[in-house]
Image 1 (cartoon, rainbow, N blue to C red):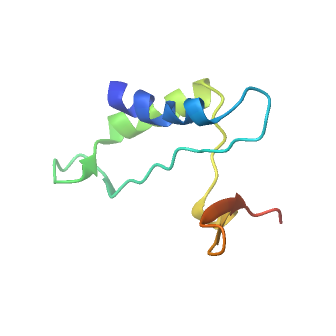
Image 2: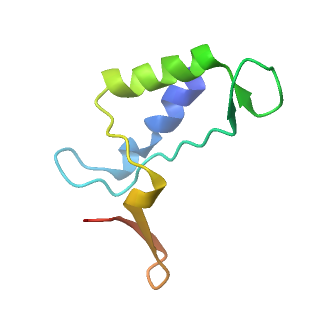
Length: 80
């Protein structure tokens, strides 16, 4: 869990307080189950990670909320 916290908070060095974010953490899960398989995250660890994000004011966005711009090599939020 400590590594998760370090990673999701790692964008702080790129962002300024009370300004739009320049960097966001991207979290990818391959499997969420208790199988013990490679690249599997246990259900309880997943729940704890989601609770951390909730408790610390993170806003969750999906992949469809991001647009990639080839010209600038950057992601932007989709302003639907």
